[in-house]
Image 1 (cartoon, rainbow, N blue to C red):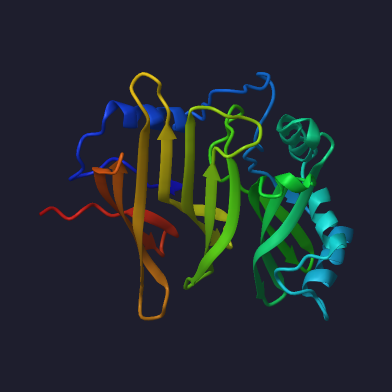
Image 2 (cartoon, helix red, strand yellow):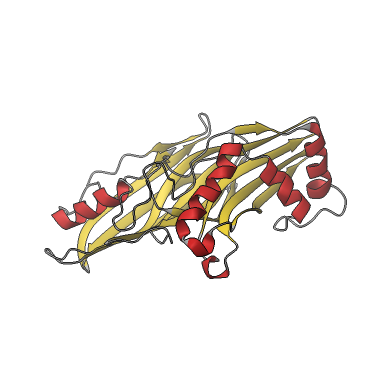
Length: 306
């Protein structure tokens, strides 16, 4: 999965030590304050598993999702949702309870899995769904807190599979909670690119500390390969409190550019990023990726020399 290196590139000014300190803390997944036990997880793992769907479950899902009178793409009947949750590997299902137990005594025993459809595609007798699996709490005051992971469900006449996908590198001491939404889709000559909005932040009931951040990325999911083809960071906001050196704030935002050919197929993606530290310009960078129909991958495009 290719990812834009946010703060490196031509034409950018040097970054201050406080800016670099913020980046080191956040990229390492470190936070200060309430620290759970070393063996505890405070967010979900980043799985990369393929689960084969039994024939009985495949038929049940097919009838509910693709048969006559099937529910709309965004709605999942409770029975279907439970079938999808039951497909998850046991160690992944158990991790939800481990996460929620660090949200305080009010959240004990309130862990709940849910699933929803982000995108659905029917191609003949093949049905593909992009899902978001959510780990959250039934405690009403924690409704805004949850951690999500994407998955691709594929149903064909004689087979079915569920492919769990990571959105970042696995980190067992990170507090980031990930939220997913559908952004847009791009048809290809063969297949489709599905763009998801993935946001992650330090806003987690488990922990508190002097560092806070909020990040938004655009994930381009390639179908039918079921691979994350590109990850582009669109927004990064960071705050660091220091009693000695003073507080620091960093905000980075990217202008996204999507280029298409005459047939409407995506050909190139670009990001022009500007960062400000404590309100002052800090860095600029430009990154562009071109879609290669032959290799079915994005390839970095070298910047044009002045």
